[in-house]
Image 1 (spheres, one colour):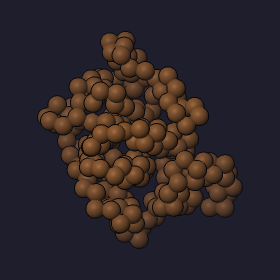
Image 2: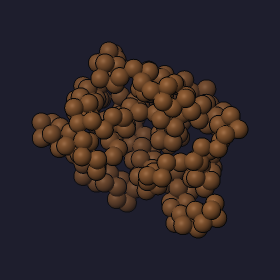
Image 3: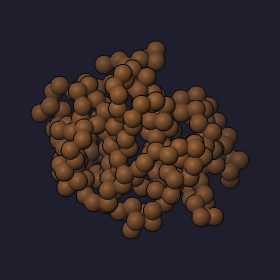
Amino acid sequence: MAHTIKEKYKTELLAVNKYIDNSYIYKIFYDYGFTINNKFIPLHSNINVYEACFISQLCNIYISKNKNKTLNILEIGLAYGTSSLILINQLLQFKNKKLFDIIDPNQSTQWNSIGLENIKLFLKFMNSKLKINLYEESSVTAIPKFKKKYDIIFIDGSHTEDIVILDLINSNNKLKINGLIIIDDVLHSGVKNALLNFTKKFSNYNRISIKNNNFFT
């Protein structure tokens, strides 16, 4: 079975090696899972490798062009932490002051803190003392209380339309000028409808593609 997976995703693994460029994360995709407390946890079957590579490259380009003294990232939705590792891997390339906040009301209950443990193991592997701030409450109530603003906000939480639209509006209020909002699962009807309604109201956002290792809008 493992051999079949590695052959099936050979092209995807090459992309992970090129765009994410981290041996720890590569092994997770290679094994199609990871081990926490001696238990192997398979990746979700719906995980999209190219999406992961896009997020990594997107953050890499943004960070390489960021001349600020600080870099703040907010992630909404932790789960098993695969996306978190990709974001943190890029954040660690930033030499100045950095911050990584996560909102996940169900990390301890639904996910048994596996995502947080995954991050701790990754930071140990990277020999990093980056502080992770986890807020275990609803994003709808948590974000408005934050005083800080963020360079990058990654939304991968609820798929319910009314919650997603609030996540987008609240994120807009906490985003630095020229910051990035990255939203996952846009083909899900609730997420898609929320995004369409949001972009109608907030027309100052551009959809970003990557071309020649640069942003293309």
